[in-house]
Length: 140
Image (cartoon, rainbow, N blue to C red; front, side, top):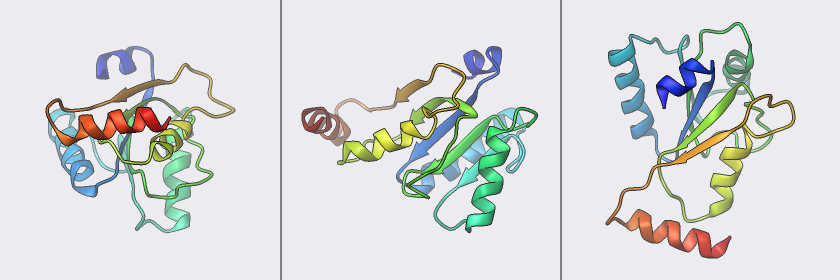
């Protein structure tokens, strides 16, 4: 996915309900690509104040930014966030309420989006995630 997004000059949103996977991914991106938090890797969780949140959003949406990835909690700043700077959305986990995932996807898929939005939902087989996902699709 990284090669596709790099070739098309796209940014990626990675959402998780949990903070630990986001922190793990941040370390991996820093190690593998030598990316720095605040430059190529942005991070947003519920602990950011409104001003910091706006800085992160502006950094992602700006055309002349170094930002490549935003790691964000699905619970952080649930409503009204416009992240049209990214066109690839990765959902790391499955939540019981399908509207939470739709809301995460909709942060990139909004008015002002200039690119097609691709969504990747990572689900491990033979786990409770499969059951959650199946129940989600029934709810939808």
